[in-house]
Length: 436
Image 1 (cartoon, rainbow, N blue to C red):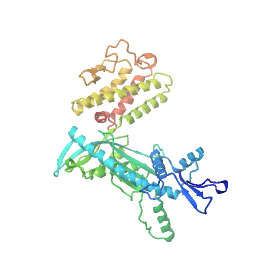
Image 2: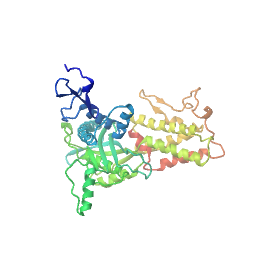
Image 3: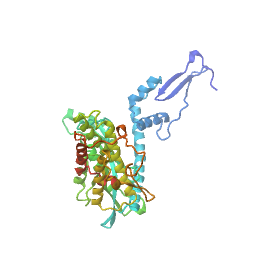
Image 4: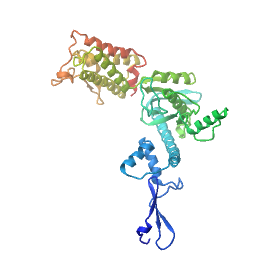
């Protein structure tokens, strides 16, 4: 038991991040006792576990160290973790997280391939190996939000997910900055010679998880998206499976669901063909399609100055909701093995989309053709008039259908917006919604 501490021998506290060491001086001898209630990590030497968990929490929440310091300062917590110690912990934590992420992606990828083989007839035989054609979805994200041609983020990440299990199977991380490389280049400029880069764990360029890495890549922020798609596609194609059932299998991407960025698919096919024999088909993301549809209708409303008129925001929301019903109905048909040739699916879906406008304007002659199949074998009509529901009222202003005979041509102009979307090949929802 430690002797009582008088005011002459008050304890001295040294903080290391969220950990503290209390120095207690004995009243009877000149020695000082160090006491702490926190444990150090067995894997990270003298680093306290609370600081390791703190850095891991920062990365999980996506918070910068300066923001965390401001939070602790506001709470009145004495937090002092030197940036060198913070960077050292961050590197060790990051490497462990990367190993776990790779193992998780490998497991998800192999499960995706096995499920595709069991449920989808998409296997080709060539050169003594079976090639499984996968359906994936992917997109790129940047910490600094941009729009149009304005992208100025120094880093970004591209994520690839399997279309069946909806789990991440590959990822590519981009960075334009590396302090070690930049210091070597500055020193080389001073001495007028070629830079000599020391051996280090460089994050500049493209760093792949179940994907190809390219540390020499120097592109813009917007160029990270097509480069990420290419690196993930190549990484999956080169993956060596560990399960015996997959050792004679080669996995390649056949259908790629993405936003309305045709440059990414063009870059993929330009780099992969003719080695992959089959080009990657681009499928439209229904969420992005609905957003574009909403923006076009909103632009039409503003252009024609229909504020509070027939094409109000309530009407636009109703048209987009019916548009979403059509997409979900095609997905339901695919789940029930809707065996129709591709050209007939095109015709059915195009007619169903255009029938949304007819339905909103009170024309129900063709609503019965576009019913939704149910698992019990019956058919459900999303049109209350076709279902003979006496209490049916559309979710339109005043519960009434729109008038197609109004003098301002609302009916024809709205149909032109829907028809223009169907006419675009890269935006075609024909094959997109069939493989949701």
